[in-house]
Length: 171
Image 1 (cartoon, one colour):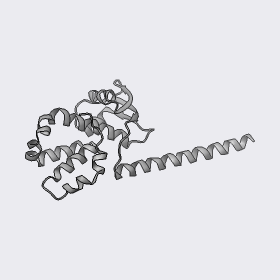
Image 2 (cartoon, one colour):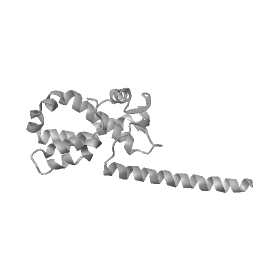
Image 3 (cartoon, rainbow, N blue to C red):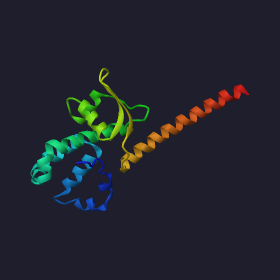
Image 4 (tube, rainbow, N blue to C red):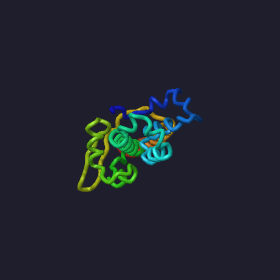
C-alpha cells in the first residue's frame, strides 16, 4: 500500500521476461502505474479482465487501493512534467487527466503521504506544487528532465548576460 515508485521494479531485467508471454499484461500494468496513466490502466483492466481479476490481491483491492494509487501517481506525474516555474495547476486539468470528478481529496491525500508539497487554493481552483517526492526515472522522464534543465541553463545564461551588461554600466 505504501509503494508509489515503480521505477525500481521496471529497471530490473526480470520484467522483460514477461514480454511476448500470456502475462505481458502485468508489465503493461506496472508501466501504467509508474507513469500514472489512468487510461492505460483502464485499458489493461478492460482487455485482461479475466486475468486481472483472477489475481486475488488485484481483485480485492481494485476499487480501493489500485484506483487511488493510480490517481495519486497521475498527480505526481502531472507535477513532474511541468517546469518548476509552472507548477500552479488547475483542478480541471488534474480532473481531466486523472478521470476524476473532484481533486481536493487527491491533493490532500498526496500531501499527507508526503508525495508532494504545495498549497491548495480552493477559491481559484488551483494547487501550487513546490516539491515532488524523488523517484527512479525512466528514459522518457530523464529526457523530459534534460529538456527542463536545458531551459533552466538558457535562462541562467540570459540572466548572467543581463547582469554583466548592467554591471558594466556601473564601472
